[in-house]
Length: 288
Ligand SMILES: [Zn+2]
Ligand SMILES: [Zn+2]
Image (tube, rainbow, N blue to C red; front, side):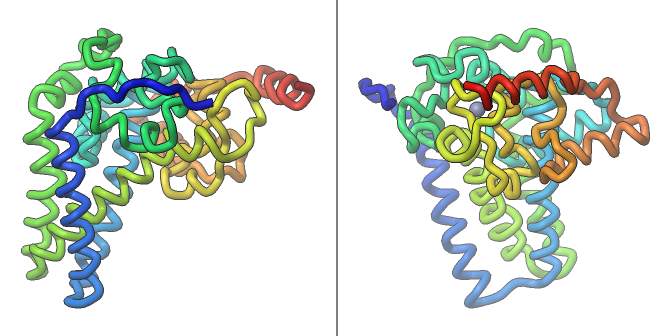
């Protein structure tokens, strides 16, 4: 069901930046295949894609927005630095939007409701004044000085971690332009669409083994590009679980990273939904 409504006002800063970043990323593809880049640049882009991706999935999403585990200061700092490099807002703003998405899922004030259309859920909501702009149900996070620091200097941190640092690293092997284009902007745009796919594709395509009423769905192929976030029906049913891919064969590198860090004492209090509750939800969903 798509809800008809008048389009909210355009956020021109976001819209222009999104457009410019896509233009630079398109040029980066031309540069990559016509001019070529150092293999070190490709390795850097891959590393940045993984670290920035985990900054969002393990940091912004499962740690800050849902508090599904606790993390030591160095882990929180890294998540905030690489999360900023993903240019998806500060952790505080991201968590505010995301908590609203869960609390008001599929209602008119869900900031990225699929009921406003596939395009809106994918990236239209980033380009318009959303319903959560004035609401910040994130007072618990405001007690973390690292989160507050990242919120205050978000723009500078995003610039430093997303563009200046990869470009400077490219200088080490004589390819700063390639690093700027590929590890900076092509990586950024690919990562945006991976994140956006959770709000669009996994609210439209996939299975609903835990909650047939929700628009959120489980989709293994979006899990592949989002470090495990594609098991979205499970996640909406059990949002306080640090796992999204709950079965051993589910591809959920975010879960594996959080678990591995817990083995060396860098994360703790990983929250899991009791097995019986999960089984009961599955049984109810399959009987529905
Ligand atoms: Zn969702
Ligand atoms: Zn969530």
